[in-house]
Image 1 (tube, rainbow, N blue to C red):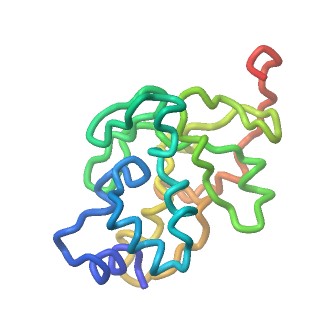
Image 2 (cartoon, rainbow, N blue to C red):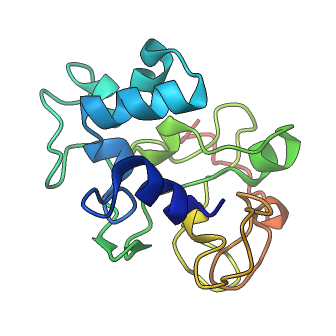
Length: 171
């Protein structure tokens, strides 16, 4: 089913998931339900939140505003105004199932520590922020996300983005 239909079926119309910065603001009860529905151990689900950086990168995560070292999303009605999700095109290209790393949300992450290439912070073709959760939005017949690597604005496959060697000083 469509992602937003699933959201309504699980929580009703009163709970807004995708109009928020979910990895920053998801509460314990919502996370527990997601973990249960997806068959994920709650401990593993908790590690996906930016809250797991509390006491390491910042004292306390600010769920309603900016926090040190976390790239701000600027969420406006499921859209991201800011370039808050970075990516390594080589990681996305070599993953069996492409996924976005939690560390790519950090302002201090500028290069991929696996491939030593600079991280991108937007689609290189249209300059739109990464918003993989919007894949089927606006197309009533699309119910399946083709790939998390496709730009939701122009369709460019982010796996095909140029990989620029990170300067030695950054590494």
